[in-house]
Image (tube, rainbow, N blue to C red; front, side):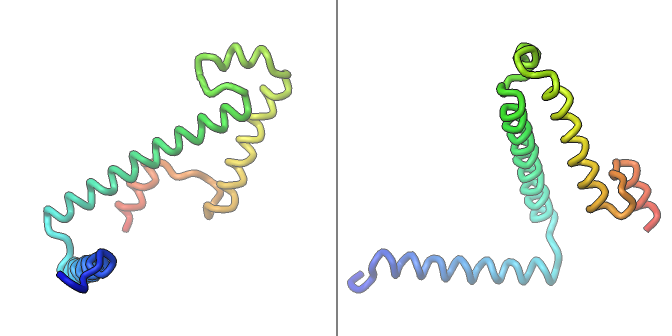
Length: 125
């Protein structure tokens, strides 16, 4: 094994892995996913969706903690008695304005899409 440094071995392994992944991607694009591959893709999408939901909840907790001074939902009422009244009105109003702007700028007709809209759209195609 003279002449084989750990770096050269790692580079060779990465090169082989990359070649294998490139070939797998080519086969997947040409033939489509097999049933097992489809289940793995569904698993990855599910995991990504779950992580996104956790991240969304953590973002809500962080925003709530920043706005109301407490991350706990059970202590919001106690915290609400400690903050000025205008914060109790301003935070939901600003949140509504932000959501309204997002809907106005990023949807064609300024309204949100629900499950029924998605089903109807799929049925009409």
